[in-house]
Image (cartoon, rainbow, N blue to C red; front, top):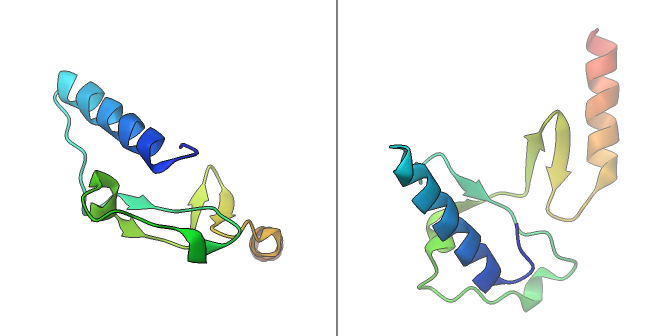
Length: 87
């Protein structure tokens, strides 16, 4: 997580180095990224950034909560209602 592309790059490099210290590797084919921003038209991703090798996703489930790129809480509410109806 980070507020700028530079900050995200630094966090990723730290994660990669920490994983390497204990013999792990980041699997780029299983890793995805999501940008949460109000206006996606203003995003500029320089092509040489490491994070650009990861697939962009619009939503994912984290600790049982649906996260969306536009912070749409309706999707989370619908997900919880669906889960409650199945129980």
